[in-house]
Amino acid sequence: MSVSVTLKCNTDGNPPVMDYIWYKEDESEPVAYGQTYSFTSITEEDSAPFYCKTRNRIGHDYAYPVPVTCTEECSKAAAGIGGFCGGFIVAILFTVLCIR
Image (cartoon, rainbow, N blue to C red):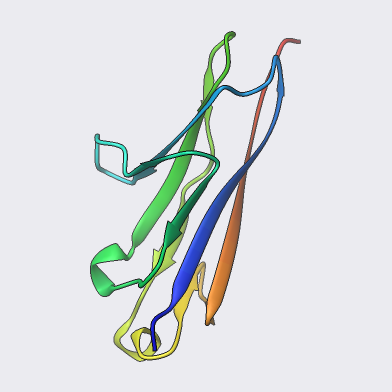
């Protein structure tokens, strides 16, 4: 059974967010672009914290990393985010960019 995981970065920006960039913690190259990042079939190699960077014309901000884990036990039927195992998982990361 394959397991799907989707990470979503919700933002509240003024001016609005223009870019979403996804990173695997401790890696400098982005893994994806866009408001969501999906694993269609998660593996143990995907286990790591992930975070999004958002940007508008004022600046940029980072969401807190969310740990994505796939243990031997989980890999047969489920993946985990923050210790939760389930067949389909959505993690929502939130960041705010605004003029004060």
